[in-house]
Length: 276
Image 1 (cartoon, rainbow, N blue to C red):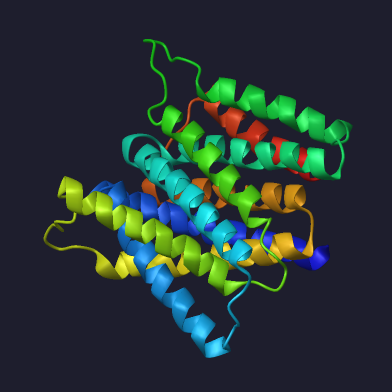
Image 2: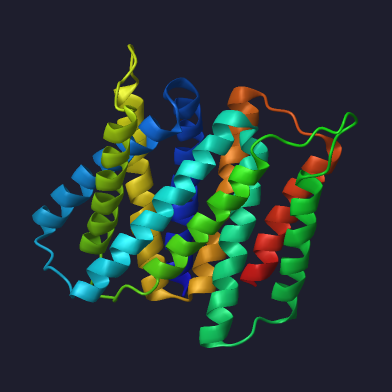
């Protein structure tokens, strides 16, 4: 269990830093191009590693679970980056993480038993934190990107749950199938909507870095759920907003209202309580 927790926290660090960089890229070239290029780089990296390690092709069921997980993760990341592009990173990230942590715990409760009292308290705090994030300001203001954050949380929770169904002997090929399905669908969508035109000064190096970081997070999470419980791994991974928010405060100098600061604290505390 200790090693699973280490892998889950490593995934949180990777995804938290990767999401921040992706948020910056999405503001420059748009969420769609950011996801497509970073996913393509990740697919290439996974394929190279799988071939070098000579990993055998797993059962078809594992490939299909990987494909569905990749599709759900793509949807979650797309909504997350749309939220980053239209709102504050330090608000969108924690809200998405609350749902991404809570829903897998509920799923695990049906498979492995009901959560204990502290986890139930964590669910309550999570709901309060979402309410604080969505509180209107003095002029009826609501944080931009909140709806995108909720949809991103649903996508990520689906990714966590589905990927936990992959067999213990399958590592890279399910991730490859997920990336391949996502890239094919995004490419088809880009061709039909003419979104594959890239602007000048396209940050290819930055997007490649995002792809490598995101793949690392996927790998760490898969190893975590194969070695431990889904609910514990999901909530530990969902600490990634702490990394994203810290980077947003340090680099972008983003400021939060007092209630939103309390919301951030409660969201992190909720994740911790769900983990205990």
